[in-house]
Every structure is written in C-alpha cells, then in structure tokens.
Amino acid sequence: MDTLAQLFKALADTSRLRILNLLFHSGELCVCDIESVMGFTQTKVSRHLAYLTRAGLVAYRKQGLWMLYSIPRPENEDQRRVINCLGTLLKANTVAQRDARRLESRISAGCCATFERVKPGTKRIAKSMYQRCDQEEECLS
Image (cartoon, rainbow, N blue to C red):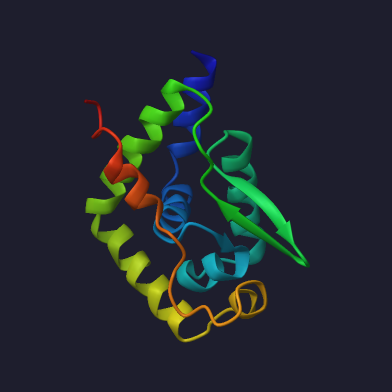
C-alpha cells in the first residue's frame, strides 16, 4: 500500500504530470528539452525528475554529458495499472496535447543539441510510450 501511496503522491503535482506526459510522448528526453517546452528552470525540472525517479515513474541513463530520462517498464502490477491509466488520461488532456505539440515543434526545429549529438540526424521524436499504452489494457479494465 505504501508503494501505491508514493505513486499517487508523485502524481499529485501539475508540473510532474506535464513532465510525464512529455516522456510518454517522446520516449526519452534531456532536461533542456523539458525546460524549453515548459518554460521551467533547469533546477525545477531536475527537482521534479528526481521526485519522479524516487517514485519509480522515471528512469535515466547517462549519455556522454547528458542525462536522458524516460518512463521505465513497470516494476509491479500496481505501477503498470497506474502508468497505463495515466497514459490514457494524459493523451486526452488539452494541456498535455499542447505540450506534446510544442515538444514536437521544438525538436523538429533542432531546439536541443542533445538530440543532434546523441541521435545524429534525428528529426522525429523517439518511440512514444503512448504506443505501448495503446497495446496494453485500457485504464482500469
């Protein structure tokens, strides 16, 4: 029960929900991509990513000088259900849709040098977590 409470505490913040949406949409992002879409400082984004990481909702890997963040495979059934439901809800949310469009436009315009160095020639967004959610059972079914 404590793990489930920790998940919901992590989700009880608009900024963290918006960050998760961007990660669902893109598959993997660096902090500067999130900063540019949301208009937040690096410190604020990093603080929220650390909170989400502690809750098990975000994973990261180091690529050269950059930390790249993504949504990990669920560790247990409760986490899987919460992530699937969250993906379904965010997909239909107007603020989340606006953020996703802004992210696509910024990455297409080459907003972040990370994508050019980490993924040379990348013009499209990486595999979307939404695709994975669509393939699994719907929210609360």
